Length: 192
Length: 192
Image (cartoon, rainbow over all chains, first blue to last red; front, top):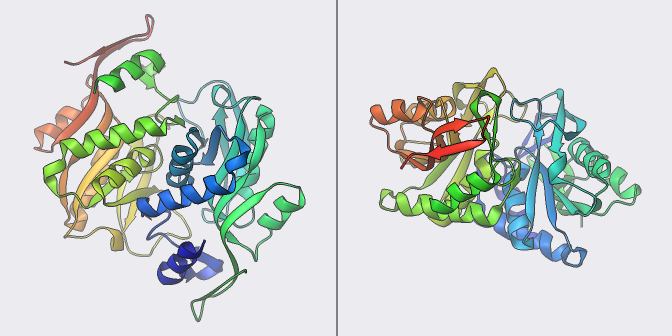
């Protein structure tokens, strides 16, 4: 997605540990009109898949998932992190290790919001090692819903998450795949 | 907002500790077409306020804030909870006690995304004791931005948060104010 690549090049910053910061438009400040374009792009790519549910994980996936769900005319469900007093008693659970927070946490989806009749598209802002997506896939599998694929805004192609998922036969659509980053020169190279 | 009240009555559940669960459309599964109507309602109520930024807190506020920001044609910023490796080094910080998670956590907004020229509308899904809104107000004040007001989807009128904020002169617009809940009979009464 060319407009996304241009936005990453003009607004993104490379931080230590190969972190690509795009918090001016994607995951802290959010450019909602651009999120709509992202939603339209994912819906176009998965248009033949009869998606009826978009699944993401709090928090950075939610803005993206809103527009995917709106354009695809389906419900959005976001997995919740950790424990909460108002969590439903029956839930699917998996575990996710967060690199940016350096901690493992449980993620949960209430059983009433995911079931065997659902055709689910998982979306998220980043794909690096695949921890979050794998946790969400666990939950889709536990619910016996059909996983249509994963839609990722930015994939770090130099980390193994994307390859591992595709090797398992899972369809992964990334709107921009970063091949390499150079922190000293603040240079980002995309995969063609 | 009549449609919201009807949705709360038909889909809401009252749980122990006066928790009103509306996770079928607001904060776990999300009805995005209804979120758009909520966004339109807030923009109508604050239409003369020249809002240029919508501020919320991850996670449940994000879906609502997306549509407020889109309809009002402005940027969305969501405060982040806790510590993260990709947090900008310069940020405004406050502390919030979460009743549903029974823990206190820091919230942060990067200084580059909030400044004295901003006219900020804070939005969130619930207002009970006001902990989250007070934390966000602290951050707006620290940035010297102008706080236009707070837009809340569901206010629990039997808890003190709304009154305390209004007594301070802060404009609070709640789309539904719950006067009382009765867990045994699963009865919800709204304020007129």
